[in-house]
Image (cartoon, rainbow, N blue to C red; front, side, top):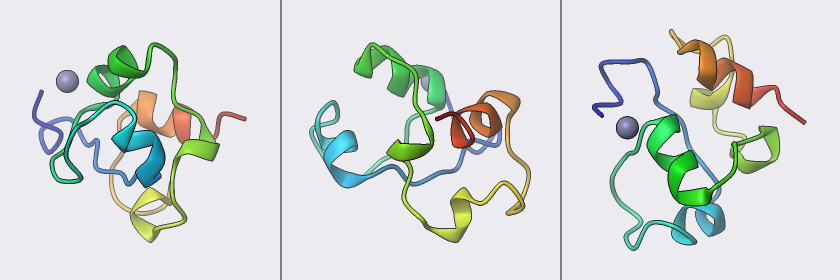
Length: 70
Ligand SMILES: [Zn+2]
């Protein structure tokens, strides 16, 4: 899924990303990444990058949910 189309721009911690994606580049939507991780994302998984701030631009409901999940 195109992450730009559904407001799912985010930065995930490198070790989490590399555990399921073979390259550092690229983007996956929340659904595709969770399918690979076989679990839901949570606040811990995201970096402190400002793009991850709930106030930074439009975010999908599920991304907002994961950004605040403990
Ligand atoms: Zn997808």
